[in-house]
Length: 107
Image 1 (cartoon, rainbow, N blue to C red):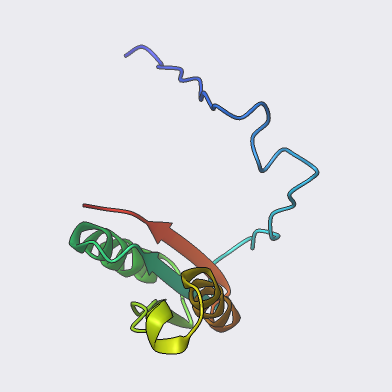
Image 2 (cartoon, rainbow, N blue to C red):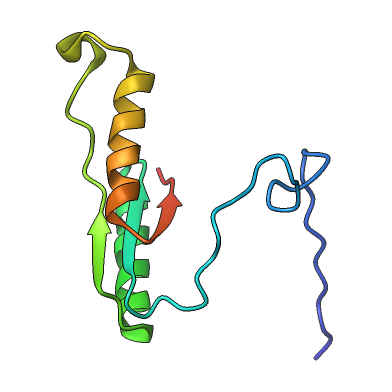
């Protein structure tokens, strides 16, 4: 069987994880003992994908916990703020509760 080689293309001149301007958080060497965060865009497929992925990772690693982010119930009109402010608070709270996060979109 022939070995297939793939080349990743990006519209960005430099991949974000290769640039020095936007540093990414350090990656853990293992998921053992970590709290895994799952962040869907709340389309049914994204929730199903992440739930299945969380279950598979739970079988492979000794996760401390798996946290599925809850949808935002607030609206800018109900809080007197903007959607960006609400999202920032929601994501900051989520980030404080998890060690590693996986995001997915689905439709």
